[in-house]
Length: 266
Ligand code: T3D
Image (cartoon, rainbow, N blue to C red):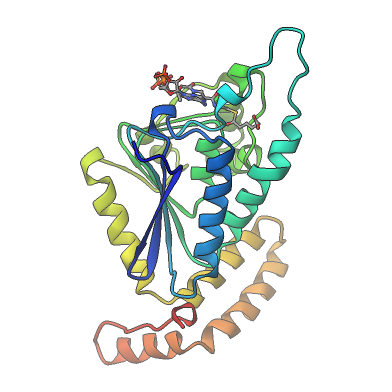
């Protein structure tokens, strides 16, 4: 096994980050927390990065926090989990959600605990049919974190969110897709081809427009309808001033594929 906890691949117009602790199902220890955050921040800082793929090495996507770091001897001082969340998970989740380009979770195997909710925080989740999503927290006396209590009711609906969170029962990729929690479940051996095609499409796409779409959808979580209409007016004004909009319309009228440049490509 490679002993670096994160692998980063720079591809034409996008990046792939692979969580790389397969023996522990890519669960997070401190080194992996730090390396993952740094890799996401590097992608954000790269003007040529138009999409980010997150996946896991081996048979799992990510099993959340590495619990071998959390064993408390009987009668010992319990760890202060708020500190880890404040130090690692919350900054990571905030950064992931705010990235100005599309994020794709390629869920290659089990996604449990924080691992499930990191996947669900991505813009698009494509999972191998053998993958499972597990809100494992309740099984060890915790609550869903990494945005789980926010994203689950929104993605799965209130009743399913409660059952998933309270039981910690595994949810198959196909059921997650049927419920609309993820974009799709695909045959295991088709996963990376499917994800690569989508990432390449985003990398060649109107990147500023994608950023504005994300901003509008995020704001809709708290806006009322009238406020959202005003926001759409303002963001569409910005989109309409991009070279990619001009190119998109020209290409449509000339019946040819568009050649987008995207501000982030420099
Ligand atoms: O702590 C804080 O800072 C607060 C933040 C918390 C965030 C969280 O994510 S809390 C939730 C933590 N995660 C879990 O509770 C999930 C624990 N893992 C499992 O329940 C199961 O491993 C799975 C359902 C994910 C997969 O089951 P299975 O049967 O496919 O695999 P396995 O045999 O259980 O796991 C394979 C190996 O990975 C195994 O090691 P071994 O026996 O081969 O040496 C197992 O111990 C290890 N592993 C799996 N998950 C973790 C882990 N080791 C450490 N931490 C893990 N989370």
